Image (tube, rainbow, N blue to C red):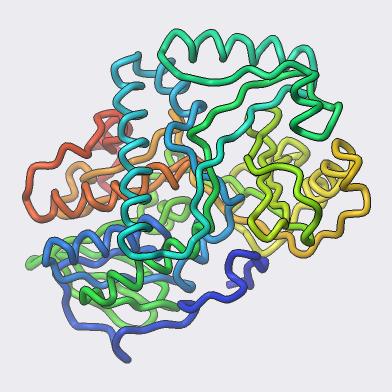
Length: 411
């Protein structure tokens, strides 16, 4: 396996190499595959239910997409709301919005209750238009959001110039439910609680296959095998490695992000442009984190699972963006740049729930770049189902059976 690019968020990772026990247990009630926010959250909630769990991660904790993102969190991602509205109608769109808000509230409660140091704050976010054509499209979004009860503040070009410290933007709208977070540190905090509760965590342990046996399931890794009653696939963009029938359902898309040196403070809120193709925050330490520019790549970075390389056209676009649009940032230096692999689905909604016709196999994956507002309670939903408790956390539009017919999952 190639070495992944070095992410700013992972520079001081405490769980790069961590094993609760020197050897793998021979059996575990549940095996969770994947050590990002989804898998770690699932292990945490399973232990809160008193269920034995072993988590296997091929790298270190949070070294996939969670530790390679742009540092954003939104309690109601508008892109996902608009997609759900188009695909499923307003009732489902509202249900998904409510779920995202509950997830964000649950993260806030966890951070507060456990004194988790992860830079979580909600200071709002701006959706910006760079051209008149984009502004027309933005106005249509505003009209739709108004119709469905979203609250926002519209900025004209003069307001943008004043508050953005730039004359590049012709307008946009400000949403107060956007924020920023050091996602990897949140995952480390969740992992610490899960381990304290008794979860067995095994990093640097790639899973090779999952086999069905007469007495349950067998999870085979390069360090041995574990017999399990249940298996949870929390591998996001890598889901099809163990579940080949998901190849066309959860597609990998590579994102690219950079971080600058500390500089004068320009904004205390985040922003995005070009309909989320570029996204930016300024951290508490005054470093700027900027991601996006996938449209600069000949492949749009689709179907790429390799995060060991930078895409040079994307890199060029990212490095030119800040000096181009913000005069104060012309001399800015870049400290680090990295890539990460996201998992996208056709309807931009994740798969959360039981895998049809595969008893005791569960999945939470395909979060389409918005995992922070969905994963924490996805783990709780699956833990409640495994514990055979009623759960109100499953959304019909997230259930795997919307894509998976019996003929597709027989392999």
